[in-house]
Length: 454
Image 1 (cartoon, one colour):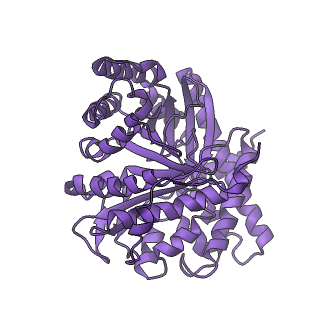
Image 2 (tube, one colour):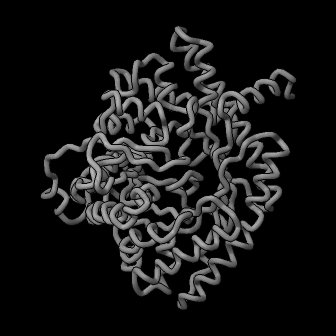
Image 3 (cartoon, rainbow, N blue to C red):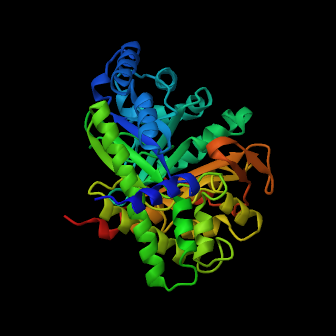
């Protein structure tokens, strides 16, 4: 039974503490769109997405008005396009044709973003997967709603270092190709290890092969809510600190489950999961960095940061799994630099480096996220950063990701201004010593011994 105090409390969370449903994401299987004819493939993709998600935006807006809960984004994720286009696509340009179809279809039904321009190459690459990866720089430059992800490693398979090398070049080329839009293409590209099939958050969302024909996954975000709750227990011991985070995460997840179930019923699509991720925005008061400061750090990056983030992430997950039987996706704390004003401030203050961010990714939900690096950073160095992050994910059996933005024409200390949800990114220094001989080795890094559990 919900009492009046809980109603008032939820209203405060929404009105004063930046609680929102960050995204309703409909996952759509496109396996039945595979065809040997490219134009027919594109027609099938357009028709399937319109049929399943034609009322997604309308439904999200209706739920938002009915319950007074902001639903910020309505998004779609699809089956990895490298697979969907494998029969029809004979070149990278053929995949770009599918990219246009996805982008135009998303625009026609009004969704913010569509994800799934993806390839899963954690153990090896087929020719179609290689072609899709080659097409990414152009595909992201000529579209405005499309997001791409490439999975290059997992605990089970190890790390495909040939794919890692290729992705270093692709990230660089994507930034060059979209230089006229502040290298924004690279902000829509993620490289993953251990990517979940049901992640509703972009840019890494795709509808995994374990998913059904269509599914509703919801991502809830509440850094401001957690920060506000911790202000009330300032100076308390760790037990009270943890209990406060856990209880707050429980309440936030409940809001997400309500929205998810309502959307699933309205759209006649199964409810999948709630992803409780503390995903910040550039808005003041909506910052994971501010939570870390409230826990007791002068700035993120100070000694103790990794421990504080580990505590936060664990309690968020514990609160979430108590609130819903179907918590999934990433569920924890995100630490994107450009999208979190507190992280931006920490970089500018000299408290936070890429190396410290890498250490923090051992215990957070994703990885090196929305980090601007000098535009003259070599593809080999980008590959080396990707390899380091994939190793963290592989060894620790967790999801890790890299979303780097080579800031073409800019140097350390300059700022990339994206605006909107992407915010702004100070260009961070990168270790200048070479890893090229390491990256130029061929093959893959084997899976760790603890992956063999059969």
